[in-house]
Image (cartoon, rainbow, N blue to C red):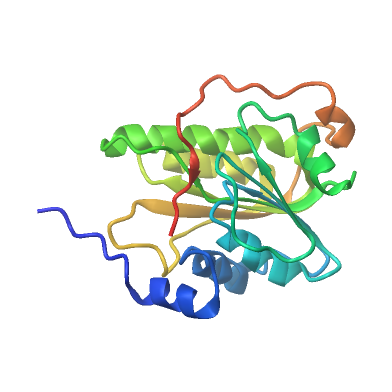
Length: 228
């Protein structure tokens, strides 16, 4: 018998008590505690930002000197602090230029976050490959968005090509690790790839975003944050 999904567990209750939109806030907080990915004054991009818990945590970490831009298929409806800007859109159809227009900055992002997950099919193998396709879209976007030396944290469902994806990230970053945060549900197959020290493969910058949309070869359906 499949394990019952425990919605009202420790992290769910803690998120409610501390004012976070979802328990996933504690996944990013653990990533931050372990790797100090986000610094005061950073500019952070959150892909798959709904319902907004990672936006909340990132805003706390960057402080008033920083900014956070997020995008999701769904509108973020919670109240957000100053310095947080959200877009509704599909990262497979969105020009990188939109992320710079969101907060009016031409500065590359210091950190890119992705808590995206595909719409699940019930097949672990199929969901894994769809998840990897999302991650590869993130990697495709990095040259136009992430500053040299910058950081990345992105979710992927474990499976056949997870080691290959980890190696791909390792070729782009000075340091790259896989992490399963404590706030992850027991029944979940998700992992987070956390990387620092980005070395772009080609010239990157906002001007590059004006030229193309970095159209992907494959587009999983129904991506977005995995929710609480």
